[in-house]
Image (tube, rainbow, N blue to C red; front, side):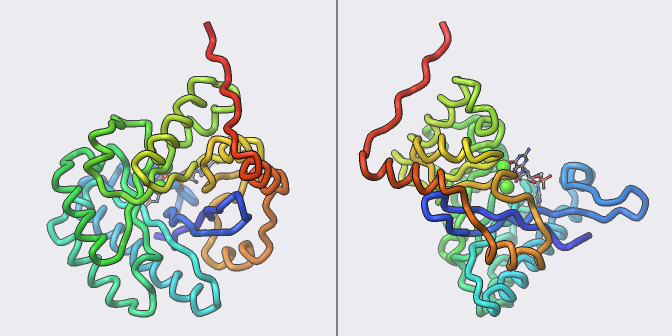
Length: 266
Ligand code: C2E
Ligand code: CA
Ligand code: CA
């Protein structure tokens, strides 16, 4: 297994890099570099799935430690599979990992769980999230909107962040229904006092629209593709975000008004 790649997350208002998501890849001896969707399904529901998951947390913590030593302070997000989440010793194992990296403040680690995985046993997952929060580690609900998003679920899951599923974000500029979903999720996050981040931000225009809707955090190919850990430090140092984003954020905070909604068809 290769070291994970990292995809930056930014605050579009200030052009500040706030964190990075660890995304695993596998250099297959014959097939070349494989993305997670090509090999993770093969180990789903097996012990190997959990071992890989532990290894990603351990590797990400080590990277975080080396970035901190070089003066770069970022949060790091790690994806957790449903199988790993259901391990009875998940919290104890996480605690061990944190203790192995005492210089890393636990709040710099964020765990991303798929909305679908969190809902498999909502009471158990809710308790688990609370236990992890006591260790200082926060959760994000990934691919939000793509599953069975409901107000009740959101109320019961103490996640700090909601990640808007990229399928809605990508198409929101030309699909009024996706735009309405994105706007709805942002409103939901605000009402429940959760942080909201959009993934799948492929162009500056996507960012402008999100800023207008009140979503300031973003991740996507329009900002950066996932990159090797060694490349992240230089990327952060050189990052220039679109001036259009600062302009949108400034003019929005000056007038304090929301944009007009698009007209729905029919
Ligand atoms: P995800 O957690 O939703 O991660 C985002 C995926 O979207 C990544 O694909 C990323 O490269 C891609 N992406 C990011 N921005 C854009 C964009 O603007 N446009 C488009 N078209 N795609 C974008 P990747 O790396 O292939 O990962 C796929 C999925 O595999 C992830 O989806 C995640 O669910 C899973 N995964 C990745 N690493 C891990 C891991 O360490 N553990 C577990 N359990 N799952 C992982
Ligand atoms: Ca994710
Ligand atoms: Ca996602």
